[in-house]
Image (cartoon, rainbow, N blue to C red; front, side):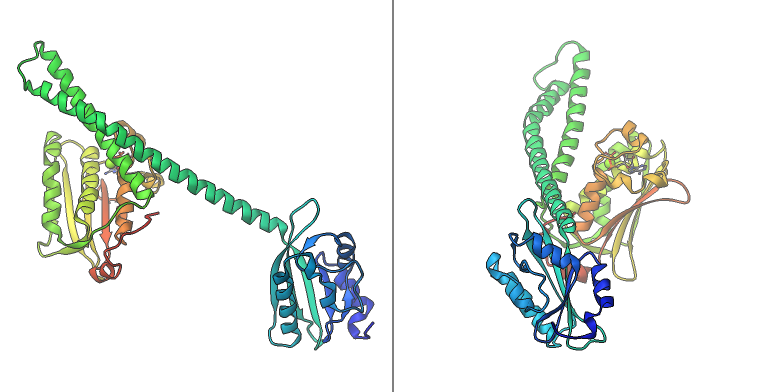
Length: 394
Ligand SMILES: Nc1ncnc2c1ncn2[C@@H]1O[C@H](COP(=O)(O)OP(=O)(O)O)[C@@H](O)[C@H]1O
Ligand SMILES: [Mg+2]
């Protein structure tokens, strides 16, 4: 055995006290110190299917490189280990690490090997093999869980897309025929109560269609199947179109609109998707406004060139604890559940905003009511994102 200050009882007792298997080798690769765990491991694992293995000897006095048994496993692992340790011996690197499998007869194991120069003892290298199996199992479990969740999500999205498609087809008949009955298109239907029933069938069918469309949209977004075709749009007329299409609903509840947007203001967005967000936010504002209230729609440009559209109502707003949760699918406040809807408008709108590289925020106004704002990035940012076919909004 090579005489060195390292071979003192002191050094050995320090090495023995660690749980990892550890050896110190000299410039020639000869083992000058091997701790107790190393010896125990070598003895108990002579049959292990190991990429980087020590032989069934204490090892002291023999070459570290011969102690490895490349024939027991994948040569690449052992070859890499040799090369790495030699680099540390040659002073070419300060540290070498390698993770490798070393499966026993009954358990799957992984080790992380590390080689570092011994401080204050030039020419000596400390090599440790740490059992990292627990960490590895945890990582594998995490990957498996993530894959299962992704598979589940995909199945869910496909199922929802197929279901909403299947349900929409019979709805066409329900909506169409209840309308002809309501209007008495082929002559009167006798008792006027039937007309009332036809109207209820029609209204319920329309509500169901709106929910199905939301579910289908959400499924499409989750499956990355929404194409975003951006163009330069004038914001004020766009907002006016959206407001006009909701005016009937609003007036039925005694609500009025104020639109405040510079006519010259433009934004870079997909017109259809932008309208979908605006209609969602306006329908929320209508739903939660007190009778006779005013809904204010604002278009603004910020100094950084981003453009935003805000929809403000005078309703109860959202409790601060629930401001984040309402962005999750199917989440509603008690009031929201009472008011109807599926709880998909905000998550869909937030996803559409993200697909544009922007964001959707809601905040309670100091004067009361809620302000929901979609912000779109500056046009040059949007252009550099190249008329994106964005794969995922999550
Ligand atoms: N303008 C608003 N004022 C008060 N609460 C709102 C407003 N907009 C949204 N919310 C709350 O957020 C929930 C989720 O909204 P949304 O995703 O559009 O679903 P839905 O309108 O179908 O309920 C609503 O149910 C409601 O609880
Ligand atoms: Mg809504």
